[in-house]
Image (cartoon, rainbow, N blue to C red; front, side, top):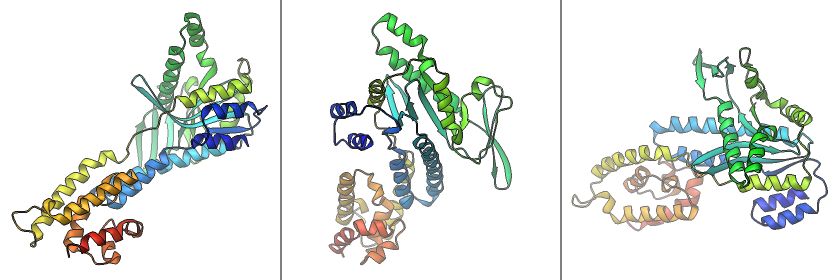
Length: 368
C-alpha cells in the first residue's frame, strides 16, 4: 500500500506533506521501496527514434549508434533495478537523480538510502572486456570487424566521485553552525559510499594490477545485494529510524531537477544544412513556381509550415519530428492524393501518416 502512495506522489496526485503524513502511519519499512523509479532516458530514446525516421541518410548511422548506446544503458539500469527489488532489504531507492547546484551538475544512476549508509551507484553496461591498471585507468578491449581493438574510457570511479563531491558540498553548505559543518565533513565518507556496478554479465574485468581502493569500488551486478549487506554490517554508524530514513530520502528527492538535455540537438545544424540544400534543388525543379517567387513564399509552403509549427507546439516536440523541410518540399513536388502516396516519401511511415496524413492531404488539396 505504501508503494502505491509513493507512486501517486511521483505523478503529482498527492503532495509532499500528505505523503509524509501517510508514511507516518506505517510503522516499519521491511522491503525495498522505490521513491523514484522513473528515468528520463526512455523519453530521450523515443526522441532519437523519431529523429531516425526523418534524418537524412548521412546522419542515420550516427543516430542509430546513439540509439544503441542509450538502449544498452537503459537495459543495464533495469538489471540493477531487478537486483535491488529482489534484495528483500529495508531501503529506499531513488533512480536517475539529476542535481544542479551552483553551476555544477550530477546525474546519479541510483541512490540507495539505508538505515546506516547511503550508496551512490554508477551503473555501467559495458560491452567488451575491461582492464583497470595500477594508475586507475580503464581500458576496454572489444571485437570490431574481426579485429581486436583497445581504447581508454572515462573512469566511472572518477565520475562517481564527482557525484559524491557535489552531495558533500550541498550537505555542508546547508549547515550554518561551524561545529556541525566540521563534524559532517569529518564523517561524510562514513555515511556516503560509492560503487560502480558492471551490469553486463558477459563483461570480463581484469583488476590484477588495480589498487585496492579501486578494486573495492567495482563489482558485478549479481554481487550488488551482498555488497550492500556487507556495507551495512561493517558500518559503525548509528541506525536511523524509519521516520528519519523517509525524511532523508525525501530530502535527496528534493534535489532532483528534470534533465533538459536534448539528445537530438547536436543533429539540428546538420539537418538544417541538408534542408537548405534540398530547398534549393527542389525549388529549381518546380516549373509551376514563378521565377519571381521563391518556394518558401508560396501559399502551400506557408500552410504546411504553419501546420507543422502548430502541431509541434501542441505535442511539445521539435517541428522536424513531423517532417523536415526536405520532406515538406517533397510533398509540394509530388502533391500526393492519398496516404499511400504520402508513404512513398522517405520518413512517412504508418504511424506518422495516421497522425498527420489526412490534415496534410487537406492542405495539399486546396492547391491542387
